[in-house]
Amino acid sequence: MGITDKIEAFILELMKQENDEWLTIQRNELADIFGCVPSQINYVISTRFSPDRGYTVISRRGGGGCIKIKHTEPSGEVTETEAVNEIKRMMSGGIINEREAALMKAAVTDEVLRTAENSGTLRTSILNGMKAVFGSGAH
Image (cartoon, rainbow, N blue to C red; front, side, top):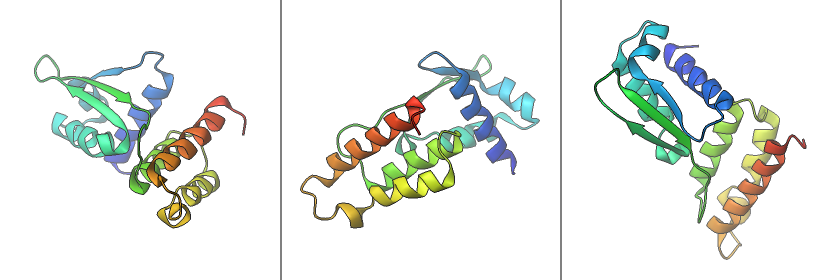
C-alpha cells in the first residue's frame, strides 16, 4: 500500500470514529504522522475526497493548514459514475465487502436503468436505500 492509500485509509478511519458532521484535521500534523510534505496531504485531499466522490472539503492555509471534510449524501439525480464512487467509498470505509459492492454496482448501472424514465433519480433512491440497509447493520 502506497503512502497515498495509507493517508486516505487513515482519514477514512478518522471519519468513521468522528461523531461530528465535519472531520477537522491539521495538514502539518498529518504530514508529520506520515513523514511526508504537506503538499502530499493536499494531493490526497484533492484526489480522494473530491465532490465527485461525495465529499465537501474546506481548506485553510496558514496556521498548520486546517482542513475540514464532510461526506455528503447523494440527492437529486446521481450518475452511474457518482454511484460507483459512493459504493467504492463504502467499501474502502469497511462498510461493505467486495461482493456486496459488486451487487450494488450491478443495481445502479446505466444498462440496468436504461428503460427507467428518471434513471438518475431512481439510481439515487436505490443507492440511498442500500446505504440505509448497510448503515443500519441489517446485512
